[in-house]
Length: 350
Image (cartoon, one colour):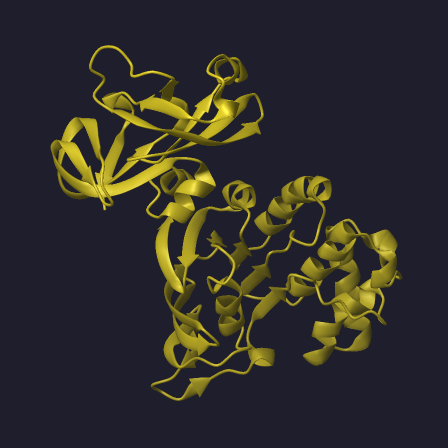
């Protein structure tokens, strides 16, 4: 592994305790809600906030080791940082902004400008070398910040929500460009976001951070296919329950019961996709294995589907067609019944 980090620190109300390993060439995306500690972790790896305990090793070089009394200052770490607001120097041109880090590390003015110009060309901004930040668009400023972080050939590249300052249309276009630029970087890459689309589009591996702790890690497919917290389940749009399985039956925490197609034992998660939930105004005929009464609480139109949030013994979100929503008059609220086939319940160990 290129980066091996154990980070323990307290900042305000946040208690951060994270173990993290990232391989060379791997793009790991830190995903989590606001206040989870994502940015604080990047600052700790860059040496910008002190650790209370732990160890940070990059390519075999110890950057922090509290027990051994080792702390490498930020300016001596082979780390590049793209800040959320880019933090470009307003009085310097794009070329001078990119060259700044090289100059600070003792590179001569002419050589620093030559390398900076090469990186501006690499990110498609050779024609804006003389422009100051206020004359650049948000996307152009983002690319200058990326060039500044990469020009020193760091072994670790940290990106703190690099697309967050952009409008939605620009963000979509630059996401592809960012992926391409990062693919040409041969070091270790760690990117922070709270945007699930950005995370799924960019990540080789996801690390979910909640309340200062890692709650899940895996490929985008693994995390979205088997969420392990309500936060992740809501991000990927599935209903997630935790309970105790005894064969096919699962007694849910907080009450209620689910029946799956296969047998399990012990503490489990049970996931149900909203499109697998059928809604009825009256108790359905027959004996469906999963059937509950409840109340249609809120409706949301998403593309060509309507998401219906239902409260009751087993709160659940269903996805139905606009025609079904109209026929059932779900906008009026009131009592409804939900049914789910046992084969549509995905169960895995908690």
